[in-house]
Image (tube, rainbow, N blue to C red):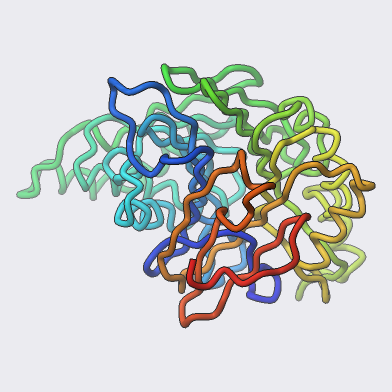
Length: 367
C-alpha cells in the first residue's frame, strides 16, 4: 500500500521494519514466568501490506502473544525479520528460534510468501522443534513442496560443517476444518470459514485466553461467521477497503466487482462491527481506491454504524522507516485515556496520524 493509500492509526515498532505492538493490559512487555498467573494477550502486527510490492510495507502477519508464547497468523513477506525486529526492542516471545506455531487464513501468495522464511530461518538460528502449521486444504502440499525445493540447502546444512540439527526444518502441517483447531494451556483457537471470493476455503480465527478474546477475520467479504465468532469479543481485527477505482489491468467496473466479492468495504465493516459488538475494532490490510484515503475510510465506517459506536477503532499500516517509540497501551482504558494508546513517531520526525472515533487527528510525536 502506498503512503497515500495507507497511512496508519496506531503504532510503529522497529528499526528498519514496522512492527506494531498492542498490549491488552498494562505491563505486558515482559514475558510471563511459568509461576506467574496468566496474563492478557498482546498483539504484534508484523506486517499489513498488500500484494503491491511497496518497499515500506511488509506482508500480512500478526502475532498473538500469551504468557510469553507467540502464535502467528499468516506469513507474508518479511515475517521473520519483523519478528526479530520486535524481539530486539523487547518482545521476547518473538525470538526467531521460538517461532513454532502458525495459522494460515488462506493460500493467497501475499499471505504465504514468507512461509519458506518461517520454515527455514528459525531452524538455521537453532530451532529444533518442527513448525506446527495450521491452514486450509492445500497447506500440507505447499509445505511439502517448499521443503522439497530446498532439499540441497537442507542436506548441506545438516551434513556439512554447519552441522545443523535434523528436526527444526520439518513441518507438521494440519489441514483444518471449522471448529477448535488448537488448544494449549494459554489459548484455544477456533477456525471459522469466511467468504473470500472464489476460494473454496478461507478462514478467520478466534483466540480465547483466560482474560481476553481476539478475532481475526482474514481476507473476506462481509461474513456472518465473523459476527458470530466475535459476538462481543475484546478485539476484532478486520480488513477493509474504501473508494472506487481500477488497476492498470482492470477498469473500475471490473475491479470493483472483484473487490465486492473478495473484500469488505468501509460501509460494510461499520455495519458488521456494530453487529459483532466488538469492544475494539482494529482495521488492517487497508486498500484505498481512487481518491479515497484513511480519513474517508474512518468516516464511512462511522456513518454506517448509525451512531451506535460505544468503542474506538484503530487502523494499522506499517512503514519500514519507523523509529522505536512507546508502543504499549491499555485497550481496556483506551476510551477514557486515548493518549496512552499506540503512540509513536515516524522516521525523520514526521508525526503519525491517530484516528479514533472519539478523537480528532492528533500528533503522537514524542510519545
